[in-house]
Length: 286
Image (cartoon, helix red, strand yellow):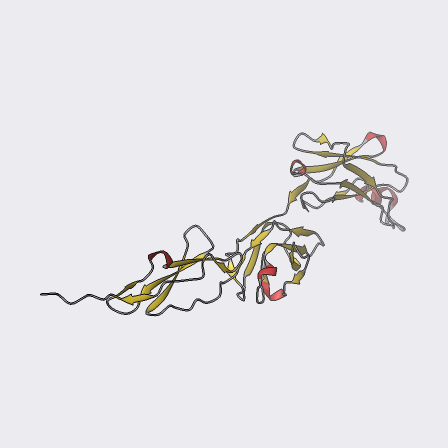
């Protein structure tokens, strides 16, 4: 400094020098509800120091709760940097707030780190419409808030535990999608995306329900009829009805005009449909 130079002339300092009380902490830390989370802050101290740290949270700088929270202070590294960590055993919604670490140095000097905002990862999954066997289905999810980069994703069938890898081509920014192969009734159930971010944080979405419908066997049109298939409103089932395909022909049995296909089993509620027949009109006696 100019003061040193004025008193001692040109001076040269050799060896290591340390800044005492400098702190650094990431501004945002991401968490997954229900998972273990670690907050980290770094600060510099003199080699001979024995610092004490206290973690605070919230706008009022309240002490973190004692239950479920563990404070860990690492030893000093070769650069004079000490690491303060706060372990949250199982994160809850109330843990989503701001955190500080207050460091007490020698002579009761206190230093407060930059605040760390703990935020939960959230996502939206899109519903999947029911499909018939031998069709395909597309699942998709969008990260609403979370780390910037998705590194890998799998989708898991909850009932069987089978996992499918999502190709990188199907990951775009904060959006992922997956299209199945040919589906059968055994593929029905709940699916969840497990998304891994570039910081190694893993997040599992809520379940997406897939319903796989089973077609009933094709019906053979009775004589002189045509078959008409229609969806049943408010149901996943469908019905097949007959209509006469020949002019001047009429339904033979009024109680056999429709069968209902139960798409959960692939079975009809009846097996017979009525034919149509010609009406005989006797000649006039006049």
